[in-house]
Structures are given as C-alpha cells and as structure tokens.
Image 1 (cartoon, rainbow, N blue to C red):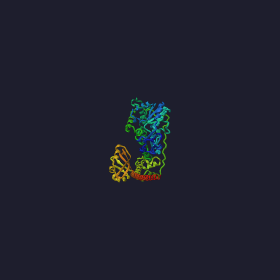
Image 2 (spheres, helix red, strand yellow):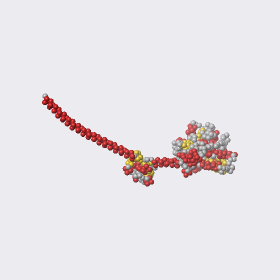
Image 3 (cartoon, rainbow, N blue to C red):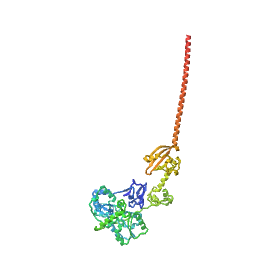
Image 4 (cartoon, rainbow, N blue to C red):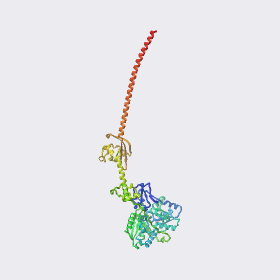
Length: 573
C-alpha cells in the first residue's frame, strides 16, 4: 500500500494486526505482514496496535517544511479534534502554527458546516429507504468494498476535509499549498483519491505534527494566543464526537421522521450494514464511523496520554466556550462542486472447492472436527476461514500455532527419542526433568522412576553445579563412569531463562576400548621386539666368544707349527 504498510525488519509474526483487522486485508507471505490495498479500508488500527512498531507510514511532513521554506502560501486546515489531542490553549496552538510558517490557518469544521447543509438539502430532495453519512473515509470503503449494494444509500457528498480544501483553494488561490492536520491516517488515502488529488497538497497526522514541534523545542506556553483566520460555526466542531453529525442535521431528521442510528467501530458498522442488506433496517439516518467513539477515539488518538472521555470533555468545552462566535455565510456560493460519487470496489474472490479446503486442512494437521480448535490465534476466526485464506494466497499453514507446536514437538520427540547420544535435562536443583532412551539404557534406569529425582543418584553432579554457578559451559570434556564401564564426551550448558541444565553425553566407550587394545598391542610389540634384540645380542656375544677361543687356539697351533718348521730348517743347515 502506498501510504502505510508494515516494515519487514520488525515483524515478529504475532498476528495481532490480523486479529484486529475486521476485513482480513493483511497478507502473510514468507512470515511477513503486508497490507493488501484492494481489501484495506484504511482504518489503520493494525498499525496502531502493532506491539513491535513494525509500521511504515509515508509522511508528507518534509514536503510541508519544504513548502514553508520556499515561501509558498501554505494554508493549514485543522481537524476540530485537535483540542482533545494537544494539551494547549487553542489560541496558542494557532500561534504555534503561525510560528512554524503557515500563512493562513482555519478549522476543518468550516468544511463540516458545508457538509451538514448539503446533507440537509440532499435528504430533503431525495427519498431513500436509508441515508448513510459519508464523512468517514474508512466507513465509506467498508460499503464500497464489502457492501456495494448499499452504495445507493450513501449521501453523495465529499467529506469535511475535502470540502474545506476546495473552499481554501478557491479563496487563497490555485498556487496555495494546502495542508490538512488531523488524527486520521485514512485521510492520507482519501486525499489521494482520483477526484481529490488536486484538493490537498499534504496530510499530516497529529503524531507527525507533534514530532515536528518537539524537534524545534518551542515553548508553546509563552506564545501569545491568536484567532483562526476564519472561524467556523459551532456545529461543525461536533463532527469528531460520537453522534456529532446527527446533532448537526437533527432538524431534517425530525422533519423526515427518520430513525437515528449512530454506530462507531468497524465491526459494528459491518454488522449494521449486514442488517440493512437483509432489509432489517429502513427509514433511518445512519451516522457511520469506523473508529470507536468516532474521530476522537481513533488510532491516531489511542497513544495520547489523555483518555477518551477526557478528550471528549475537552472538545465539548471548546465548543461551548466558542458559542458566542457570530455566524457567517456558508461557503456554498463559490461555484464549487461538493458532490461526489461512490463506486463498487468489491473484489471477486475465487472460491475453493470442498476438496481443496479439505486438502489444505490436512496440510495444517486438521484431520477431523476435533482438530479444528478455532482458537483465532492466527487472526482468523475459524480454521476453515484460515484454510480459505491460504487458498487465496493470503495466509500460510505455518501461521497456525498449534500446527507448528505439534510439528516442532513431533520433530523434537523423534530426535530426542532416537538420537544415540545421552540427553538429560536438570532443573536448577539438579533434579532430572527429562531423560532420553539412550541415557536410560546407558545408566540402566527408567524415566518414570528417575524423573524429578537428583542426578546424583546416577552420577556425580559437581560439573553441573559448577556450570550453573559460574555460567561457563563445559564443551567436549572426557569423563569416565567406572561403575557403568562407560566413557563419554561431556557437554553441559545452563539455560538461565529456563533455569535448566542441559547435559549431552557422547558415548565413546568402544573407542576407548579400542584405544586401550591398541596401546596393549603396541606394548606387546615393543616387549617382543626387546626380547628379540636381547636374544640376538646374547647370540652375538656367544658367537664372538667362540670365535675368540677358536682364533687363540689357531694362533697357538700355528705358532707351534712355525717353531717346528724353523727348528727343522736349522737342522738341515
């Protein structure tokens, strides 16, 4: 949507926005919320209640500042609910606007006076079964998009904002830069309507205006009060109040003997419109507002520090205090077109077959009526309604909390039950909270008999206590359990938020046995080699000894032989 949507960075998939949306105009894709413009009624409640503040609202504030700085003729039209929002004297508020650089300042209530008179004229001239007010853009969108058969009952007149914008353009010139300041984000969308795009140049909310003033650090209380450039009539200021429109046209309502039905809130509007479609409501003037308590209770007001009834009281006091303002001529003789048309903006939904719905329901884990909890956590009232949204591409199966929980538990259980490593969970008192089958087998215990009992019954708990006390995890420590003839690689972590100690033991008993066998084999091999070496040394020594004796004997024999030979030579000579 052009003016407002959700920011992708902050969305946490809580679905609070979808639960608040009466027309389910919020699409979830890849776990990201997105406003679907064709379905949206621009009430902006979804953005206001988002706990993550994951909202993206296009602001005209910089354009307004730029217009003022460029010395354009900047005109402000102020919604009468301003006295309920701002804790400041109305006269000083006008002075504040002048200080900010606005050339002329008027109340949107002047436009409301025009609209009231046009309502009177229309109801007198046209005989309808019902008359639906059209000052609230969101209520108008509800009819156009979801109850197009009721368009014939909508009074074809522009809203006070548009009416006043047209008057201001006529009075101050086409080159004027006209700014509406009010509580309603829906006015941003209304101002961009095909027939209204040249009426207003900018729309800023009270919240945007507040941020502007706070940035400038202006001391409002020291400003000298001053008046609006043109005062509105008393009745026009009633529009932001519940039944305010009815009070403004009460004379013609009595004249035509119409039943008065004032409704506020999107769901209340839709309920009434359903009754009108059924023919249950006739001869009525219907004041419709999409916000609870009308404009003074809208989403642009809910973050205000003053409560709803305090705001109502302030607006009423403002109306009564300005009761003495003299009447002036209505702005109806300026050759301005105040009428407007409403068109069928309904979308044609592709309906899913029963077979397709059943298939989607099964994908969500809904195999029977008992599985359909219809809890509404996902934002849809029933599981079947959610399945239809999935078929339309507006939702995802993963949005079902129970489906995801069951799926997560199923996966967790499969892993927990079948992993070969020992997994044990302890509470802060070192009592066993859960133990998987691998650990049961390793330590010859049964979960039902050991759960909620101290871990010290099966192993020493000092490591686990140290981890909890120091906050330092144990990662990959080799431990032995002689009583069980087992060896493990131990990992211990403390989950502080849950006050849980998690133990993971990787069984390395076989590896350790193999290592010990290998060490034994090496030792045996070394011993054998040593024996062979020693034996060889003994043999060598024995051989050497024998060789020595033989050599000596040979030497003696040869010496004797030599002596004999020499003696024989002596005799011969």
